[in-house]
Image 1 (tube, rainbow, N blue to C red):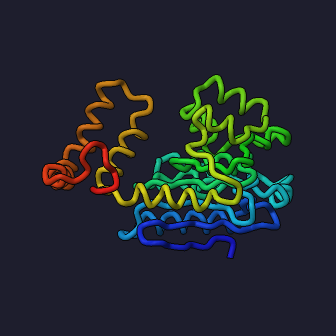
Image 2 (image 1 turned 60 degrees about the vertical axis):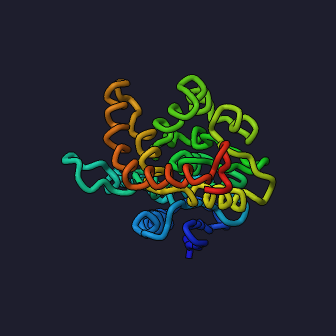
Length: 266
């Protein structure tokens, strides 16, 4: 199986394994990735997911050997078009890139995350990047555009100027630069991206989850909104969480837990 799932308490790790293709995505693995992440989002026991490519590569992009078979086909990707009526949005060419999950996903990046693989990493909330890992719009060489959110998510992360430099040149972006410009969230030692990402996932998962999800949703959804509309949305998204979780948390603080910024005793 190209996609498997492993669980450790509230953390779900989705593993993509096509080592013969450096974890490039074909239609079968795209469907399997979508199914795995939707199952994670539905699972009431799951709080945070880690997305990892087995065998030393996060993802080398769309499977170009498969794509080469589409030469001469009449609109070979028509089945992935956004519907005119706005209903039933199909999966992205790379799989989960159009999903809007209610829970966070952390990419554990080893080796290449290039072309469509770069876009899958951008789809994730956070990116833990091994010290010798790298990103890049390597599909620039072959006339294959970014169609899994790369032109949308990369400018939001690093700013339009930096994004255009990366997108138009297709150049390699190594881990140190990725961290410096805000593309990478953490840098991990070689061969340890999954371990570090799972540790981070457990750290996030131990907090009250309605609050985590409300703040995450507000931060994502505010893009492009006027300030007052975003503030209103933040309020409407989060005010109910005070009653559901915040009051009990305040009581724990009042009883002496978590004083002076102590995150270890909450």
